[in-house]
Length: 212
Image (cartoon, rainbow, N blue to C red):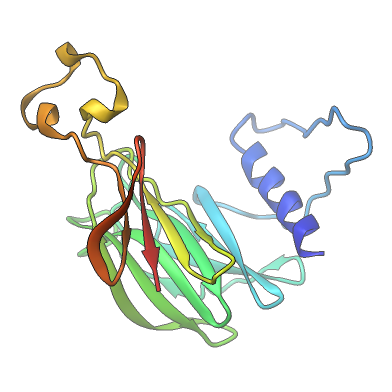
């Protein structure tokens, strides 16, 4: 049931930006698209399941909203200050049992001075996210911040960081496109484990972090 709901919700969210009146279309007639929830707003970036509920992120205002039984609840389960200029803001979420992991561009106040991209671990009470623990401070820029998160079969949480506009040699950029420190960034994409700063795998385009 959860896999069906994931497809329905993601399809609905991804189709919103196309046009105001766009309707989904299918090339595979055995599939069905059904609207699961209405009244979404504020640039929804992603979602996760917690128990039988769904948490969704509103990029621009730093809110985490709860969908329960197909209804978007009025009160946010979390509201934090974010810098949402460009591709910053509330960017990623994943959950393991009663824990939720949030990746966002923290700010002194909403749309105020940025404190950088950070990953926090929260406890899910059933109606709110509480007791934040800062797990990681990450590079940030106005764009290419990444934010995708997922959970492995070992219950490890993985977070993907973008290049934050630092176009290093590993991205096959022409040398004439690179300036200053960019030409020295030969190892600017690695996978890190939270408890260790040692790289465990080099990656060309993105940096993934293992969080616990």
